[in-house]
Image (tube, rainbow, N blue to C red; front, side, top):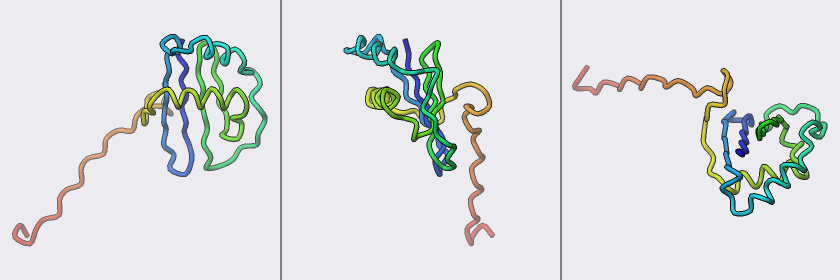
Length: 117
């Protein structure tokens, strides 16, 4: 079982993604208990907040999207454990247009030197 946490938003709008294979963790049973404890169908209510982080948490067959302030209790514990157990990957594709990596921009043309002018 994989747990994938993607964080997007904030002032810079960067996306970071962490992924953990639960079966490879030395305390896999504790992970499974925590995942069962998550109220997947009822994230804590919070009004939308601009320029704040948004977390997408996926653990098949479950998925939830929460604002930063909604990460409380077992939600916070799961996100913290995933972040502690893996390194973030920037701009990871998560499917759909919103998760695509940005295309590379062409390099800027060098400024000609006085001798080239």
